Length: 229
Image 1 (cartoon, rainbow, N blue to C red):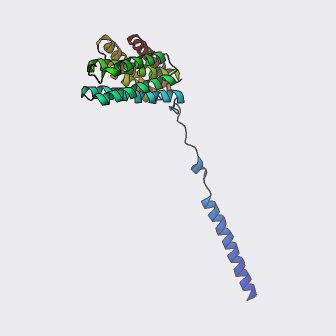
Image 2 (cartoon, one colour):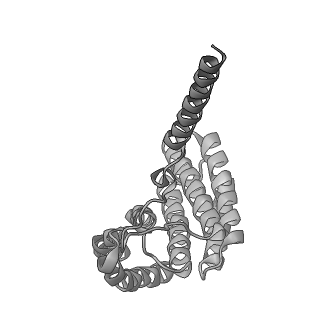
Image 3 (tube, rainbow, N blue to C red):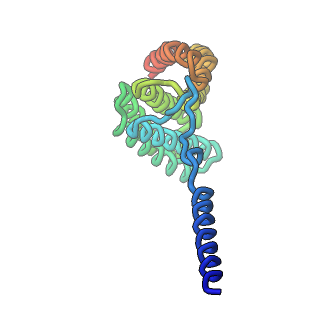
């Protein structure tokens, strides 16, 4: 009887060891669970921009939104809101100029000063909608030029198609408020640039071939903007 108990005990012990070993093999992480995603040849991996440029872009977007609000409020006859929005937009332009590293820094400050001169005219009703609208369009043009030039100066444009598209669209909006030959020439350049910008996110040879073309087209637009300011 004692021998039988011993044999049964040994059998149980061996069975437990085998079961534990099998369980450990089943629960051991496989190499697939920690494998890094495979990189596709030619894909755009990094679309980030430098912190300084990012801050300038954000400040410019906020400033132009307030400037548009100022024009809209004046069109409705809301002088108080127009004044407040214009003050906020001017402060935004000045904040953008502080972080700006491009040749548009002085132009931003100049447009902000021109808008400040219009502030006292709003409460008295001496400022026409058309006058404020044109002044705001010029300020938006300076802000948009700063953003585009900042993107060009930040390095590679690969993967930045959406950022450039946003910048070009903003300049198109500013030009529409100016009219005349400047708007016509500018819109032509914008249309041409937009037809190429989308290729920057496609990766591979397509994106690399598009990059110098986009730089040339955007540079031509920036020269036109500087002339208008």
